[in-house]
Image (cartoon, rainbow, N blue to C red):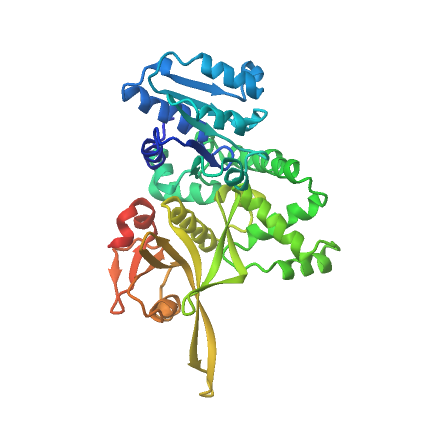
Amino acid sequence: MYIARNQYLEKLKAARENGLIKIVTGLRRCGKSYLLFKIFRQFLIEDGVREDHIIGIALDDLDNEYLRDGKTLLSYIRGLLRDREMHYVLLDEVQLVDGFTDVLNSLLHNENVDVYVTGSNSRFLSSDIATDFRGRGYVINLHPLSFSEYVSAFDGSIDEAWEEYYTYGGLPLVLSLEGDTAKSDYLSDLYRTVYLSDIRERHDIRHAADFSELASVLASTVGSPVNPLKLANTFKSTKQSSISSATVSRYIEYLCDAFIAEKAVRFDLKGKRYIGSLSKYYFTDIGIRNAILGFRQQEESHIMENIIFNELRIRGFRVDVGNLLIRTTDRLGKTVRKSLEVDFVANIGNNRYYIQSALDMPTKEKIEQETRSLRCISDSFRKIVIVKDRIKPRRDESGILTLGLFDFLLHPESLDL
């Protein structure tokens, strides 16, 4: 099954021969090896690069075990440089190499070598890259399949694709599995035996049960603000656990560092500043989120919000949660302060979009509720409500665009209608 991942290929093409190490990172099993060794390699060949100038090494292959020694790998690669023309070195699972950062940095001294690597697990997390490469790496973060990528390979209707996607997510192998049991078992086993194992190996977690429980709590509160102190107190009262709020925060960081979850920080829209006390967390793959919960708690509204967040991140937006403090009157006519929320404040370049996620808006009261925060924003950036309903895009008298979910997910330009 071939799935074109054009936006990532374009990033690789744009970074070609830029003098940096191209580092493809992301959640395990999201298609990093496929992108590099199938899609990008095929592009190079079609672009006229001779095959003997493409050096591809899968370091997780037992036949290549001897190349996991750094000096041996470096000598091997340099021995394959045939002439002064550019050679493209593609290394899969580079974290298996002892001293891999020294090897990669050494390869930069060869002017006719262009280096591309993938890495994952406990020795190649997001925080490591910035430290290890110090400006000598160009990072491409590969996400699980977007809904449009998923649909391109799905055999069925758009509604059937949506039901599968919001249940089992976008890890590519899921598309080739038959039946609910095979898909749910695959995701559950992957989370338990790979993702959790990686994190425990990396951080030597002593309270494994507490960590697993915290992941479940985070998965069940998608779209809700998370307070580490409150969570720690809940653990103490209901789980007889002694973990502190600092430990809770650290455990959440581990999930984010392993690309399992991602943080959205609250942003004060009037004060133009970040509010650090509470944040929201979304799961990089909704199938893994559902697997953590045993495929229970599949509220479509929360899952839809998570998928919208993921889509914005895939498109390159920086995404915050908007917070707006307004003055209003209560039933007694007394002036009170009220906090309103904008689900997503999405920024890219000089453009900003305020976005609300709403499963449906069947009544005037519901429309009022979903659009109130947007109408209280005084600037001229686009304000959008995304609904599950199949509707044509429409704009109200306040300039707020209401957009159907599938239009948003399948057409990147839809935000600018």
